[in-house]
Image (cartoon, rainbow, N blue to C red):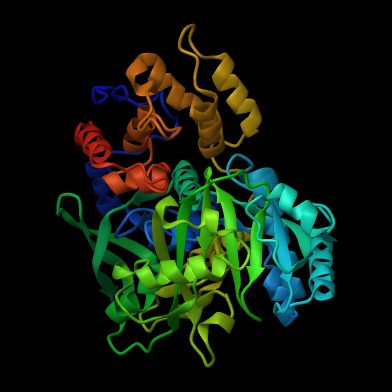
Length: 537
């Protein structure tokens, strides 16, 4: 096909009620306004705080040196879960809280993005845990979620193998069953940014903080360089929040060069394989007393991982190495048949960094908790946490901001308790209903492929109708980006004009699933680059 030429109209009003503003316009707004809160970092924590702070009535700005969720926040295990292994440490209350957040996300906040997933936990002869212990564990786990995903139980190896033909049954004694959820983390991040903007936040990705502003020794803003065109500008704010994840201590040293390290990093790698058979349940296989290896059906592929090892290098250079790949495949082989683990099936490998509190002991047993510190210049730094509880963390940080003395922020906020706890993300809708509408609303002779309709419904919700509007204006945009994947060219235009995509990787890895499917060929990348180059404004 020819590279699509279509774009939105000049106003963008017919495409979205909250279109992404042009970069020059956004820079002017950021530099010309005084903000209550500047959030540095657009990952799990930054996007949640920006969303909740804007929702509470604060004037909020958010910048990220890369793409929104461009690092660890789009390199997770894609799970929205209660934390089964936390029961080992007796963290019953934590598991219950996680379950609550998980179910609110799946039911009210993002039912178009968060999907139920059945888990099988195989019990092998000479494994680290016995069937009785795991059976009791999954029952307690399901009880803590009020049995909202059924009752945790034990099933026979034969029944488990019927659901997953790739399950290794040699020496398999029993299989424990429980329920959790999964998501596409990058899509959740993008729609959280859209929610923040809809509430009034000003945001800019690929905007690097090069220094901090000080007034009488207090941090009151930041100097920023636009990585797209090199423009430099400043942002003023009453309070600055450092939510830069693995870079949290780097920014703290801009505030105070002698700041001691506050966190340590653990590397988690994953690989993606083409599936050779249907997977009706995920596998969570104990490797040892602490670790579990996952085999997850995700985006029509199979996601394997993860590793857990200390990392002391440059966070920007973290990669899934050949050693990581070999380890993941070897651990997956504990419960997955060799035919599904052929290296020729590998489509993608990635790695992210967990931000953990400092302290003794190995990273595999460290607590996954949020660390909040205040620097000598008044900058707050927050690190850690996970996607399941990202809304709760945002509310917690906001409550802390409200209590800071001398800033007057609390007077400008709606009380945290008054925030809409179940405010949905943009596009909230039943994905089955959206997919049905996409199919029945197709133009005569131009029926949408059911796989594409389903994909759009489960990644955009009702916003998928804006993408089909693009196709109606230019039918060429309805063609697939790659014939082996469900995505269409209208998504590239939409990512460019409505979702802040600036680079080819922004589009192919985080706005779509082309890269993780192994379909980002040189030809595809060149065509996407050409579409991005025609950005209006």
